[in-house]
Image 1 (cartoon, one colour):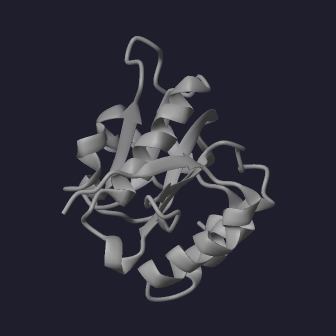
Image 2 (image 1 turned 90 degrees about the vertical axis):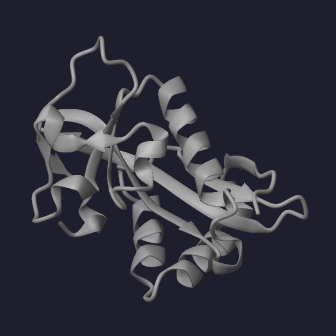
Length: 169
């Protein structure tokens, strides 16, 4: 079942619910703790932490974009993305991701990288990062490391991705 979602930038009152979404969506607290650590990191960009909520204001989905570098150039890293188990496969994650990507594009960003499911992220326009000469600093399957370029008439940096320190890579 696909439902209508309201996707929007997080507010301070959403922070506990965002933690709950990440705790419910993943087997450990790693992603929830990562979001909290990123909130106080220079990589945090106001407006790029996004929730998807139901018509009764239940926060069901979450997506985060933070500053990273590709080579020496600024880019964005997408993740974590999470959905409450009872709302998975209903469009909450897609709504949050699309809103975040639209906000990033409106801010003048041009490159987003993601490490994720090779069959999920292409629906948003992501392709293999290696096609741009972009690679992580750790071992990852080539098909899982992806990049999205908003305007391919602009130069796209290549090189190794440097994630914010809280990612620990």
